Length: 196
Image (cartoon, rainbow, N blue to C red):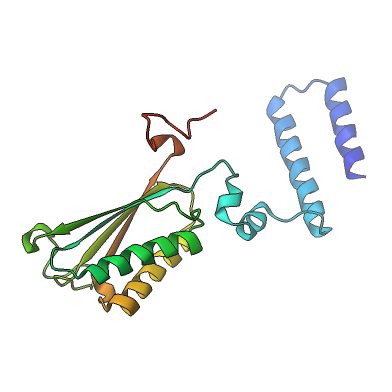
């Protein structure tokens, strides 16, 4: 019945060209909305946002969409080696388990700094007070993750580092940098994920 209405509307427009072409566009939009609404009520289709939320982000963006990361970890020169291992593993585990990064996609750079090389506001910032144990983590990855995924990602890293390395959660500072797929070269001077 709804399809018949669409056909009739199309025939009417063909028979009598409209002096107002925008009306035809509006009619088409209203008809499409009606079809989607009827399909959703009948249980044949889900709202687009519901469909997206059920799928892992890596699937939503297609198999070719890589979720590659690069993690930079900056911490004090006197940090014990065990702390570096815990931080590295916490970041990698959160990437795989929360952000859907493929296994073995682990590129990290650890830089140790003298006490005067990590500068932070001693009076605190946003109600947080830092110490010399401050760890600055910056992750560059392909954009597309939701705010909820990013929040879980932050929390997961802070919780694990706090639990295993006994670093205060306030001293775990994380920044995410979103990029496009074509912003990466994994070697050979090539753009491995160049647009097709």
